Structure formats: C-alpha cells, structure tokens
Amino acid sequence: MTPLQQANQLFEQKFHRTSELNVYAPGRVNIIGEHTDYNDGFVMPCAINYGTAVSGAKRDDHIFNVYAADLEDTDQFSLTTEITPVANKKWTGYVRGVVKFIQQHCPDFKQGADLVITGNVPLSAGLSSSASLEVAVGKFCQQLGNLALTDTQIALIGQMAENKFVGANCGNMDQLISALGEQGHLLMIDCRSLATVAVPVPENIAVMIVNSHVKHDLVTGEYNTRRQQCERAAEFFGVKALRDVSIEQFKQREAELTAIDEDTAKRARHIVTENQRVLDAVQALNQGDIQTLGKLMGQSHDSMRDDFEITTPEIDYLVELAQVAVGNTGGARMTGGGFGGCIVAVAPVEKVDAVRQLIADNYQKQTGIKEDFYVCTASQGVQVWA
Image (cartoon, rainbow, N blue to C red; front, side):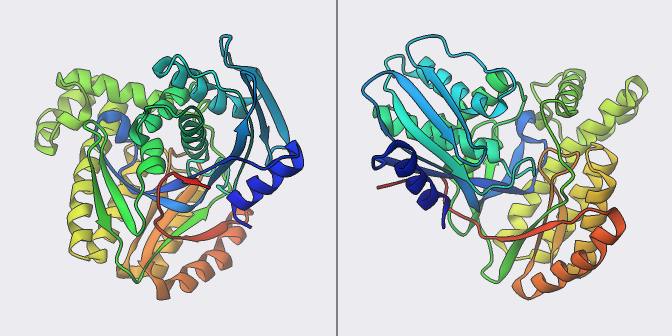
C-alpha cells in the first residue's frame, strides 16, 4: 500500500468521513553537493520514491486537528491564536512551523482541517523525512486555502519552519527538491538564485541508498557549528558566502586562514571544492559519463571525511564496500547532513546485487549493526491527488 492509500484509509477510520484533499511529497537523496546549500552554492539531489502523504478535509472552524499515523500521536492547534512549539513533541514543530509561516505570507489563512500524515521515508537517515513533511503540509495548506503560493515559495516556507521554529539551521536544498523534483532526473540547484537544471539519469543506472542505522540529529549535532565555521571563512575572504570563492582564490590564502584557524580552513576547502565537483558532475552526466561521476563522488566523500569531518567509521566502511563492488562503473559517498545516516551509490543496474551482497556479508559482521538497502528511482516533486 502506498503512503497515499494508507493516509486515505486511516483518515476514513479516524474521522469517519472521506478525505477531500490528498498531497504527497517525496524525500530526497543528494547525489553530490553536501553542505554547499547554506553557502549559496550548488547541489545535485533527486527526489526519491519514498515520501510523506497528507490526507484531510476542511472543518467548519479554525482548528488544525492532526494525526501522525506512524507515531500514533495527535496534535491540535488553532489558526486564530499564536502558534507556538510543543515541548517534547518534535514532529509537531514541522507542521505548526509551516502553518505559522504560511500565515505570515497569507494572513487570511485560518481554515481549519482534520488531517492524517503518514510516510515511508526512513526517519533520521538523512533522506529528508522532515522536508518531505514540511512540503506536503505546505502544499496541503495552499490547496486548502486556495493560496497564491508557488511550489518554490512552499519549499522556502518549509525551510523557514525548520530554521526558525524547529531550530535546525538547514539550507534550502531538501525542501526545494521535494517541491520541484522531476521524474527520471537529478536536479542541479543554484541555492542562491534558486535556478534549477534537470540533469538526466541514464536509463540503466540505479540509485542505491544504504542506511547505516547510525542515527543523527541535526539540531543537537554539530551541523550548526559547521555552518558557523563556513560563515567565518566567508568573512575572512570578504565575501557574502563561500560560493563566491574560487579554488584559485582559496589556494592563494589557504595558509593564512590555516594559521588563524585550521578547522575553518578545512571546512572552507570542502565547500569550495565541492561546488566545483557539482558543476563537473552535471557536465559528466550530460555526457552519460558515469565513470567521471563516480570519481567525483569518491572525492566528495574523502572531502567530507577529512575536511568537513562529518562521517563516521560505519559510514566510511559502507562507502568503501560499495566502491569495491561498483569499481569504476559508478561511485559511492555519504549523503545527508552527516554523523550517521545513509550512503548513496550510483552504478549500472546489473551491479545492484553485487553491492547488496558485499555489504550484507560484511557490514554487520564488522559493526554489529544491520543495514537497510533501498533501490530508488528519481521521482516527481510534490503532487496533489484527487
């Protein structure tokens, strides 16, 4: 059963009526371009065939009555009083935050609703379950109130909710790809201008995601520290964001920055080189050159491990296994915010079984943790269903 079918069914059971509005927003995996989004840089994710569904119907008052099916938990709040966070119920922040910031854009939005939320994006795995939820709720509100909001605006409202309501200082990539993803394509996003370029995935290529089951939490993790270090580096170079520093400019002043703060210099080196890797990866994919993409993914992982220092031994081991299995026919790297979560591997379809097998034979034996393995397809962004 798809998340949408499940949400529909649960809505009928819970509220004893038929849902009038059904929205689905996908999770994402980032193929290359990690931590570049909040540096105004370039990223290349794809929406995946795992996501969040919201089914609901109008109420005749101003109450949002929410049932989170996967958590078997509820939340209720009014759209006519100030919307505030709920202590010890983190998931409610993603819903409340989106509604709050939609009201900032559209002050007349006060239409209450009963809604059920369910999804199949693995939680805390770096596949943007939170962005998927934010975009789904945002689109639901837009449809519910017939609001003049574009999908890009909905994505940015989702980011605002995560930054200012939940407290995770994420960039805009996750929400943008959930809102704007294109079937069969990766999406190169310029996180400053918000311009997107659809980049085709060759037909025989599989996108594999392996969940290390090492959990991360970006709010309490070191994500915000990395962001501050990047801001310090941009200040050092006298630019708005590290996006504005070329590899040549970085090399000219690398020693100077290292003498002041070695960690900040390492973080900057990752961002500056990663931006270039994304641009090179677009070129490679447009030429169907998976071998070059694989090399760039390998370099990206090394940079995250050595310069940005956001990988874990388990993640490094998974990448190593995947790289052995795909050889020079593709690549693998950590994906997501870091400190656990998932790796992504890209390779011809006929390599999937070899990657799965090598990891199944070794990962648990080495780490004591059982992995989860997903084969994904590049999918459409947020959609409304009758």
